[in-house]
Length: 496
Image (cartoon, rainbow, N blue to C red; front, top):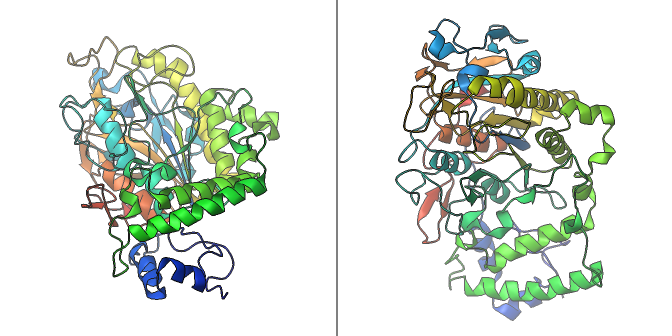
């Protein structure tokens, strides 16, 4: 029997290249070679016209600061504004000429020649400016049409549009044996809803994140990477080969007489055979290689390195993120441990949602942890030669109000700052980003963009652009309606 596919491997969308798909096997299921070629063509990822910055990144680390820090107090100080706006912190000079940060970020200030601060991002969330809708927009690049008018979150479902990490998993998968999408430290949480905008949604379970939410200051449980008792690798491989026959037959049932796809697997809710084929192949490759498991073994790091990142849940999660990048993971999300709408509390793990006591919470609790760990991550990536190909972003779902203690709708107390989605800031580094610079400018109070306004969807399009994914790629949703990877938005090419 002549095998037309060569060595076992993958077709363009991870159809298994097994001995089953030979000339004899094809005729067994009535699938002709032209149909196979049309199947490949239908699943090919669109390619955009290359630009100098397109595809310069190999991986992404998203540091999501849920609860949202005050942009004025961290990234965009306003020393000439009235006291009720500028607050208690003074600006400090940085390693980047002309860039000033809040005094609560002294270690990041020393690394400022390696990153850019963008100060003109803004969004109008659906309904009230609450966390849920803003989080969903940041995590997915889509409007939260199923949210309530108050902007509160709804439980995740397979009908959701996919997260950015899931899109990256689908359109720029890692090599077999490596992870596509890993989520660390904490799930995205708003009120009682867990996992807001973080899953694969309609792309299916194969594109959900691999989650490791245990406290990495303690030994992590890695049972996931071990076979059950009584099952060896040969037995598991045999089960998978049997399942592949069912997968191939199901594929044919979803293929029209002319060989074109009738119901694309990306619109299936996790039960499609191709979706499970992807999942099984990923799982099998991870079990065959110990590289993924070793990426979670922090005891391989020196005590000095672990201390440099900080012995906190967030700090050790940032170290895990660096180890994931070294292990070939494509997309890593480190989520700040507290819920988005938790009251600010003392300690290393409290929320950034500083409706009250903004300054003592930032000075004594939030910023020392963030500054210590985030600066270590950027410095370490740079020293190891990984920053050039790793896009790093630190951002909350919005900013905080310029005027202190003035709002009543969100229970703002003395010395607190309210939600403020109209204008805020983010840090971005690596992956071809121009370092040591400032993008955009807010007005004199930090309330609205003064120039170069951008939307979170522009930032998401920038992530896709950096990874070599066309942001204008179209795919079908669960009703076979065409959807863009983001509702709108264009790459911020000025950052490169």
